[in-house]
Length: 396
Ligand code: BGC
Image (cartoon, rainbow, N blue to C red; front, side):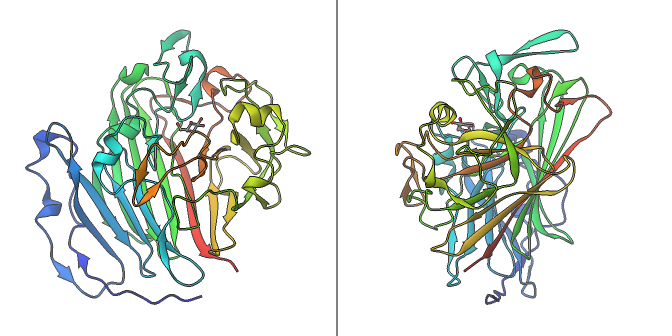
């Protein structure tokens, strides 16, 4: 299916170094506001606008990337959040498929459950909010019962990143950088994190994660977008058909910490090896489903870790929207928005129970404490590098 091409102006925002809009002292160096030279030749575009202001007056950016099909991705440097992603349905109607808010204020509210954000330094849970590395115990914030979740009280989802847009061979995008200081949220080592979002002309959102450190530390980065392919963000996601390319999953205890076992999915409600409606078994009488209040588990992906493998597909039959997830990561957390309770609204919708699902590509939860899981230690001189793509199309 060929969509109408949109010819839009390419704003001349692209050739500058790190636009350090993430700190007030750098406010004078924001070349992206000053260089709006227009060339109305390109079919894709990048533009920057103000998303809001932090309490200290720092201006927060919103980048809007539009490819030649009209697919539109919006990213803010607050939390490196995907705030909006408009993709076509079978009638060529572009609609937003990610939960979120229209302005910064929405994201600054208490209790926003990581909508669209990059989470880290360690995405997912660490048992009892501590781990031992090279004989030393590191204590982290217990921000999820007794456990540590998604990097702590002020994780990567709540910091201002440095940002710059670019136009590259693969597509248009935004590069974001965060320097996570030694001791931040209890983690050792100064960690430099680079996340690059690219919107390609074949409607893939590619996320490239890199990090380096000056002391041994643990790293597990992911994106926490809540998808709803129906285009109606207030609708439940139970009718989406999900395939997860995994023969095993990671069972958990009552506080959602892995037991250490990697269990075959066969014969359980966790078998998504064939496309299955999310709602088909989400309330099954099953201890694991009970612990997660639905799906809130990590699957052990088939295929060699470190290589790009198909991790999951999601089809929304009514709209025809189809999403494919590929990743180099060994695991994927499938979370069905079980804790969404209707207390947050944004972009004209109220985010009720199970109105969004996350597919968080990552290492398994609690890996720093689980000897049998693939390691998550990053040492000086090494580069952490992972990739994930979410590709959109239409399937009748
Ligand atoms: C976790 C959930 C949690 C959600 C929002 C997910 O990644 O697995 O348990 O409620 O993030 O915080």
